Length: 362
Image 1 (cartoon, one colour):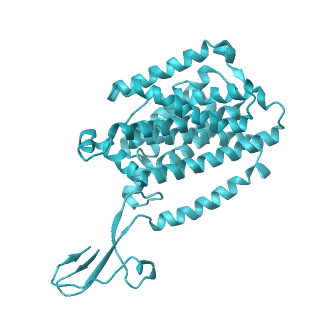
Image 2 (cartoon, rainbow, N blue to C red; image 1 turned 45 degrees about the horizontal axis):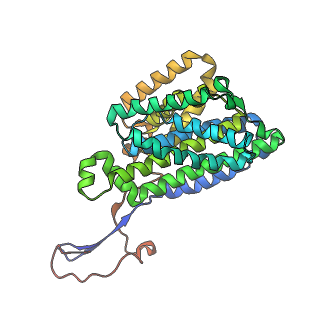
Image 3 (cartoon, helix red, strand yellow; image 1 turned 180 degrees about the vertical axis):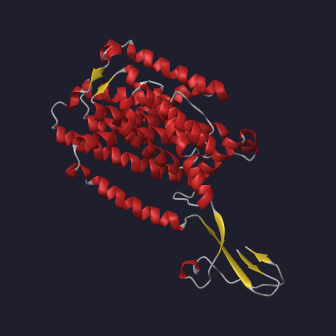
C-alpha cells in the first residue's frame, strides 16, 4: 500500500511476516539440526536415550498446545493416543512381523484413524466436561489394554522385534527418526498456523459463534486439529516406546504425560510455537539435575509452574515476545514502512499516482 501525505511526500508500506530474528533463528536452527544429526557418532548411548525421551515429551506437548493453546480444546486425556500409538508399534512389530522402524509412522496413522470415532464422543462435551471426558476416554483405553493378555495385560510386554538388530544401529536409527519427527512437528505446526485453517482455528478459539457467523466450518476445523493432535501424540508414543523397548498400560496411559505437557507449555508460553521448545529445554535441565529427589522433584515442578504463571501470565516466551518483540516463528502479518531504496522491496512496490492529499491507493 502507498500513502501520500499532505506535504506531497510519498510513504510506502509493505505487509511482512518474517522478522530479522526469524531469519537468524532459521540459520541457527539449521546448524543445531546438523550438529544433532551427528550425535550418534560422538555422543554416548545415554545422551541418545535422553534426547529420545525429551523429544517425545516435546512432540506431545506441541500437539497439546495446538489443541488447547490454539484450538481452545483443553484435554487431559491425550495420553490415550500416545499409549495407543505405542501399543500399535508393539503389535505390528511383535505379532505382524512389520519392521519396527517402519511401524512407527504406521502407528501414528492408525492413531489418527482411531481419533475419528473417539471425536464423536469427545465433541459432545464442552469446556470442563470435555477435559474430564477425554481423561475418562484415556482410562477406557488403559483398561482395555490392561485386560488384553495378548499384549501382556497389566504388566505389559517388551518389543521383541528389535532383538536381531544391533544396539548401536537401533539407537542411531531411533535417534534420527526422533530428530526428524521434532523438525517435522515444528515445521508443520508453523505451516498450519500460517494457513487459512490456522486463522480459522484462532477464530474458533476466541468465539465459536463469531467464527461460524463468518462462514467458518467450526466442526470440520476442530475435527482436523483433533486428528492432527492425535497423530502427533501417536507418533510420540511410538518413538518413545521404540527407544524404551518395553510398554505397559500404566506407563503408556498415565495422566503424567498430559501433566508434563501442560507444564512444558505453561512455563514456555501457551499459544506459541516457541513456548514448548523453551519449556522442553527447561524441563530437560530440571529432570537431569533434580529428578533424583523423587516426590520433592514433582513438588518443585508444581511450585515453579505456579511462580511462573503468577509472574509471567503468558509464560516465559510470551513475556520475551511481548517485551522484546522477538518472534522466531511469526504467523501474524505486520504492516511496515518500506525502504524504497532497498532492493528487497522493489518487486513488492509499484508507483502510485497521487490525486490529492492523504489519498490511499491499494
